[in-house]
Length: 110
Image (cartoon, rainbow, N blue to C red; front, side):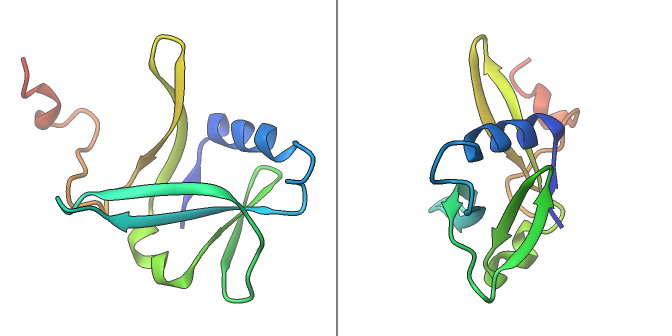
């Protein structure tokens, strides 16, 4: 379903260790913007009866059933985007604008 890298799992566990978050799951959501690209959201939330649940390290992640297909095979990572700036990144082959690492599109500006 969704792969969570070790770096992302550690960061999620750190955030979940805050008081008040221990009984919540990390919800992953997605929406399509005006250009057709997918935009992702994550946040701690209560688990609903119809949620799809899975584990990443010691944290439970949930998605709504409507997102199952579009989030299938996605990877969540936590990486340094710029020196000193770390962010969650979503690598999703189901995104119509997805560019696989190492593809020719990575070198368009060269």
